[in-house]
Image (tube, rainbow, N blue to C red; front, top):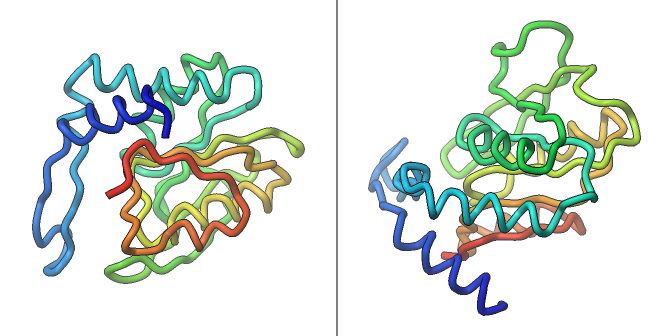
Length: 178
């Protein structure tokens, strides 16, 4: 880990709070909303991703809901479009869906069929990777539409839950590994 990434990880860690038993008993939720409220910390996370992907992506995909916040800001800073991946039934129009497992159940996410042109270079963003189900499902949807996942960016990686393994060879960058 570079000094700048270690410094950013320390800043992120200082802006997190743990919420026990959320959304279900036994889950320790890593809440990054305090990070969003700190302009310096939020900007540093966005700037870090922008430095890595400037000129390398055509679109940013953000996963509902916290991935929208970090993804939209990053897309804006990169000068590219933003595509939301949402929970089932929330997008109008024709969609594709993927069901996945997470640490406390199963869920389904969707993307618009016409979200981006085939061949687009895509950066997938979310706040946390835990078991990897949500991020892997989003990547599967991107690839079904003919997109190339050039990177996955998350703010927090919960290493003990092994989510990185669910991504196969897709490249993942985590600001903070807990």
